[in-house]
Image (cartoon, rainbow, N blue to C red; front, top):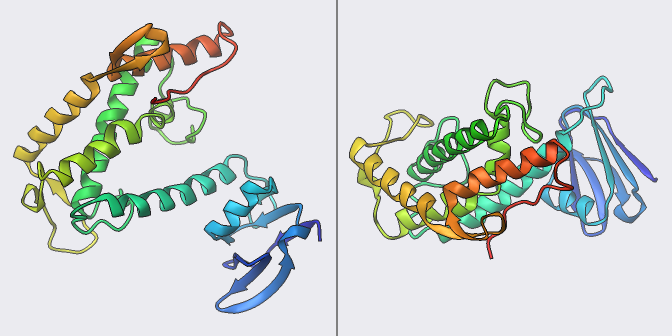
Length: 258
């Protein structure tokens, strides 16, 4: 079976050893050896487990996503990969927290625990920084290449900041929590579950102070011919992208930490 068609709405494609298994409501619908599959075509609401996604990527299996009527979706496969990667990443992130304060994974609409509240707030600050850098170089911050342009948000800023999320924000939140700079008393919890947890005003001052210290810290950037601030790196990455889009550079090089 070179092509595996997944049609049953609400079903899940799992991997058991070297076999793909399609199940729904604890009932097995289909079973096929993974090595025999060259392409997977998915129609509508079908779930893929993380081991399946990992196998697909490792073995370069073409995966086509369509709606339930057969209309092809472009970028959906990327979103699925991103979602699986984020789940694995934040599962490991939780283990690095000395006090997780109720953190069990990324929740941002709304953030329902202190760690997610910190992540969301600092990601917002980082987005503003990148939007400013993009404005400086003359690009449109609302037209991106990874995030959907259908939503009224600064998509290009969100695209470029992906290279810096873990460097600037994720590590800072770990430091703030693990060193006790912020603690449970710095947050306002809602009486109802699943409601937004807010950072108190005095704690915000501390958070912003340490964020500014982080973005002003210096690091090597090849386009700066030496060390420069992270904030300057944001602009340099935006300028590099502008040169690539204007055919003034052969490629765009993402930012690496050495």
